[in-house]
Amino acid sequence: MEQRIVIIGAGHAGVQLAASLREAGHRGPLSLISQETELPYQRPPLSKDYVAADAASEPLALRPESFYAEHHIDVLAGATVDSIDRAAGFVTLSTGAQLAYDRLVIATGARNRPLVCEGSELPGVYGLRTLDDARALQRRLAEARRVVVIGAGFIGLEFAAAARNRGLEVTVLEYAPRPLGRAASEPLSSWFETEHRSSGINLRCNEGLEHIEAHDGHLQVISTTGHGYEADLVVYGIGVLPNTELAAEAGLSCQNGILVDALLRTSDERIYALGDCANFPLAESSERVRLESVQNANDQARALALTLTGQPAEYRELPWFWSVQGKHRLQIAGLSAPADEAVLLGDPATGKFSIALFRGGVLAAVESVNRPADHISARKILSGGTPVTMSMLEAAASLKELARSAPIPA
Ligand SMILES: Cc1cc2nc3c(=O)[nH]c(=O)nc-3n(C[C@H](O)[C@H](O)[C@H](O)COP(=O)(O)OP(=O)(O)OC[C@H]3O[C@@H](n4cnc5c(N)ncnc54)[C@H](O)[C@@H]3O)c2cc1C
Image (cartoon, rainbow, N blue to C red; front, side, top):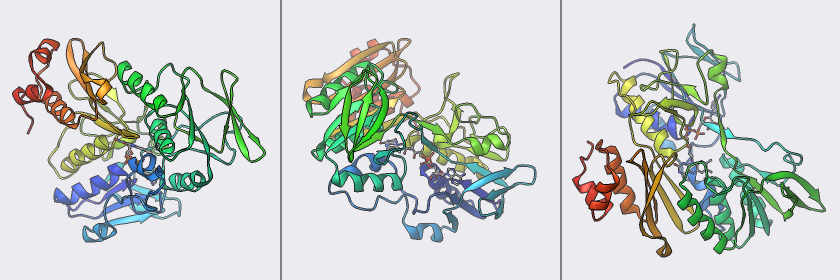
């Protein structure tokens, strides 16, 4: 209980871990090293409420400032860890300062996959990951009339919808045949595609970015089909790269993230990793995944806090996710891809429906649009441990009824 625990990264995972460690009874020294200078904050609003015209100028803090002192969490803000000395058990900051650990946790998250094309460095071209990015974007948005968004993933579409709500002309370029292709089913993509188009967004699929030019105070985005789109602002959301360099340089095994076991332990038993930077074995499966969600960061932190306080807890939580696109709230329980069958629940024309996705004849995920009750039921069903077949779903009047009969996890 008196061990020195050092956490690198004060995002959702790092902050939740520090809080859960104190809750679980860790009384030893606890340091939280944050590259960013801000009080740790929530990232999801940055592509949603924060883009809105009347956004508050400050985001929601993950915890009030007083929380860290009250819980004796030593926050080192604006500090970057440059290296890990595993043999001696200390980390070195960019200032040269060294910090010894008994247990080290890497929660370094991810960074935007960079745009690689001519013109990607021009003023007016933005990625969106940090509060600094969001503030810069908000300033530029105030003057902008036309926006081009590169990438129709969650962040690109959330931003596009919020910008459209502000009355801007919005074009979205997506090189794949459908939006949200990486994480959502085909029927869901198709519904959002229609919805975004009907709100006035010029959503172009099968059309990627070729390069960006600067012309007399505005930008010109040239697409792979040779079209040119004028813009005052270009925002890209083309995926992220896990921040694994620190771990890899210290000799820890990495492959699409820092490799950890079910206890979130790296190849060094004194070092753990979690959140966006960690690649972990998925419960009840032979697969490994790296997930980018608040649920994953928070739940892994809660499990790891137990392990680090002597109550080893394998990470086995059901993944779930949410996104807000304009007026629509999407919630996904389980992992949508890959799925081989989809069953529609409700009428998409009402704007409230769910899609049940089956893999190998068993319910694997439920995507819900503006149906929060379905989402809650789906989480109960999917974490209940009983495989649900299509005939079981058809026999039940609703997901709610199915959830009632499913064993509910503690
Ligand atoms: C705009 C946006 C919207 C999103 N919306 C949603 C949503 O609606 N729903 C959802 O579930 N998820 C959403 N996400 C994803 C979610 O925010 C991430 O999954 C979550 O932040 C992961 O937490 P993390 O702590 O692992 O990483 P991060 O939040 O990335 O935090 C990692 C921290 O570590 C710091 N760091 C990195 N290297 C070092 C170092 N060497 N030394 C010191 N510090 C370091 C970084 O600067 C960063 O502050 C969104 C993300 C973004 C960017």
